[in-house]
Image (tube, rainbow, N blue to C red; front, side, top):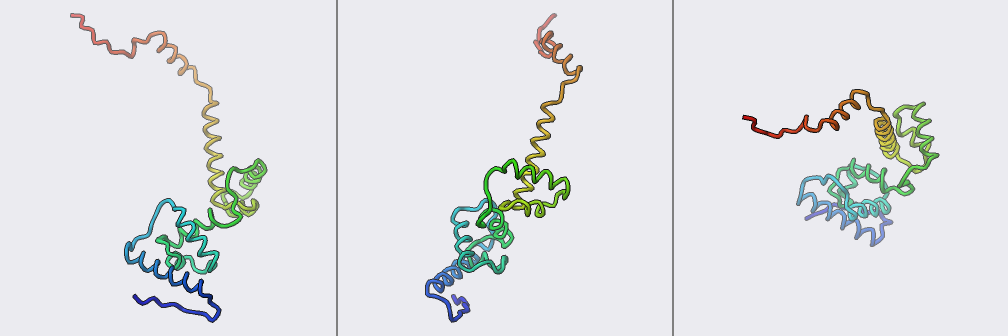
Length: 175
């Protein structure tokens, strides 16, 4: 198998070995599967992407997975990096201050998640959007729980308690 490699005059031996290895891995994974992996990322895939970006930087998302030895799409690699692996991305619960900023910003900006996220250092637009939708769901569930029962519902439940046999089929033969 012939693998084309472009060398610069400043390449180190370890970089050359890594480059050859990633080229071989990329071409062998393409030959073996021909399909892109979908779904959850493994720890090993995360490490491959992190080490590749730390060594060579970000240059072309559509080509990078092949050279990094990943059977993923460029879009998948970009999203994984930007939303989870990139240094300084905050993980965990939002603080009260962050929640206030989201509420205030959303009232002004609407669903412009990247603009809202720019006001929250370390938070991604995806994190902000997901947090907003979780907030809406909690609020809707809370309002549902607080809704008083109507008198019709209360009357039916009383009737069921007073006359439990209304809903029971005893199959007695009275003949």
